[in-house]
Image 1 (cartoon, helix red, strand yellow):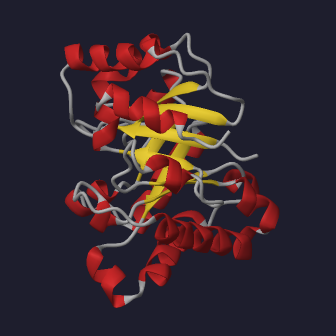
Image 2: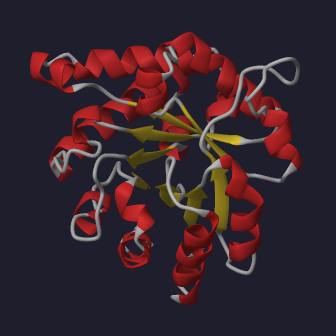
Length: 254
């Protein structure tokens, strides 16, 4: 069975003291994960090692960086390379979050380079895709997301796509309190898997974990995660609350 993942995206939040408190509260709940379940903590760069240390005794708990640069090294003040993250033994990197696309002008071509940088350094990308409200209302969301996948991922060999992680983010449901219904999430996740199947075949497509990322909360996670093509969530605001995120972890399919 493909991985079922509850991934926290802290974004640019929390002081170091708050980060320690949050991680310790979640760890103290002693949530046991099965072989196909993972809890992932996407923390700001300064907290990567701290987070690794705090969760180190918990099986299938991992840390993710929220971004990386396309280049291996060089005169790029303020950037962090995939090689640096790999040297810290970080497992995951969130690539192409809608906020990176919107505020930092990251396009599909740039993200293809970031994906390559991650894979070259044995990091697993959590590749984000999704549509705005305008595109959803125009009814062109399927074509839009398909283009994101094709332009950023379809240069990869099947071996690189196997066991990949994709996060579908309906941008209109991020931080707005709006949430795609469980059926809407399933519809897009099934479409993404179908796009992958047409390119890479059914076996590869079925190995890819597709997370839902749009206002996931403790009170809706179980319903959303129950859908056959939804393999967990990329969680924003609710991941900053220990009780909320713990319940979301518990909502993963076993």
